[in-house]
Amino acid sequence: MSTTVSEKSGTWRNWAGNVTALPVREVTPASVDELSAAVRKAAEDGLTVKAVGTGHSFTAAAATDGVLIRPQLLTGIRKIDRTAMTVTVEAGTPLKRLNLALAREGLSLTNMGDIMEQTVSGATSTGTHGTGRDSASIAAQIKGLELVTADGSVLTCSESENPEVFASARIGIGALGIVTAITFSVEPVFLLTAREEPMTFDKVTADFEELFTENEHFEFYWFPHTGNCNTKRNNRSAGPENPVGPVRGWIEDEFLSNGAFQVANLLGRVVPAAIPSIAGFSSRVLSARTYTDIPYKVFTSPRRVRFVEMEYAVPREALVETLRELKAMVDSSTLRVSFPVEVRTAPADDITLSTASGRDSAYIAVHMFRGTPYQAYFTAAERIFTAHEGRPHWGKVHTRDAEYFSKAYPRFGEFTALRDRLDPDRRFANDYLRRVLGS
Image (spheres, rainbow, N blue to C red):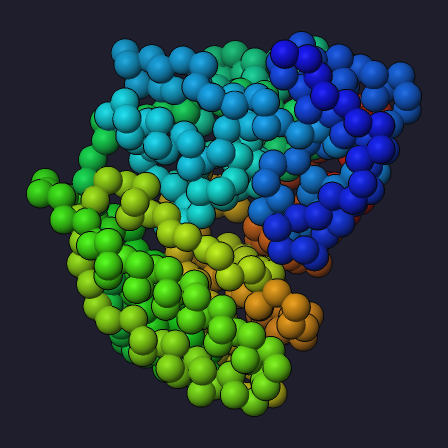
């Protein structure tokens, strides 16, 4: 298989359509050697290099006017080690394919986010996470990494090999090199029972500590302009399997959560005054349900309605206060918000620039339907999040810079020093990284 190189590549767009880039050329390497050669060639030509996944980031983390690396030929499982309980996968493998392949082998990741369209390297590099009392982000499940560095050499790292690189590169935002393979910790496949039910905003916030403590995975959605939430509790189960039936699954997950929701958002975009009424309807349309299935069928769900998103991690103990301030802000404003606010949690981890680095965290994600103005809402929300020492998701809209991050992350200097060592000429730099990491 040979490298596919197109000298004129056209415009690259992310999933939400809010980021575009015009690279000089695109390269689709079929091996790690070909990727290394592409990085060395870029250096000869004085060009920067960025790898893109499926474009699910809302920031310009992957944008480049240099060489764009597409990893779609670097896919599949390299190795399953049942003694160590690890799986090594190529960086361009979509999470969806990994989850299916692991399930066939009777294995599973411990925790995952709610979307599985992203590549494994794109998801981990930006700190993608689900919700968990004890289990953390996808990157926290990494046991080893392989990356091509700025001089084209291949570096492997783990807790025992290049540990200082391992500490940072699990969430490297593309600044340290191009990830080519990831080794994840896995476990025998298990069953989760999901319990979804409506609950009022006042009850969720009053009982949050209890709901968090009593469930392995707790999350909820609050519908702005209403006092209504939908809650979801996922806990390990001895079985038996009791999946959502195909008819009910189609009605609730496709027709209501995607089809009807898309129509409601289109209506709200044309008639913003109708949004509070639509929100009231949307928040009541899904009834309570309980089902038991293998992890990826419980954790993930289809997301076909396109949106723009901002998400901040705040210290977990600050969640309820932050959320109440957000609700008060929306209630007292003229904003019209048609998308629910998503709330999740993660335990502290040891990754240098993880949003949960060194502290138990709660995540608050605000969304706006694609094509509607989001700046006023996001600006007001960000003001609240930053007042509570919030750390923005690396792949979602925010306006923070290196000066802010140097205070938000105790180990920020550790990451930038490693970047200086691995990429002194800034082969992997772009405007976004210059803003968030400094030049």
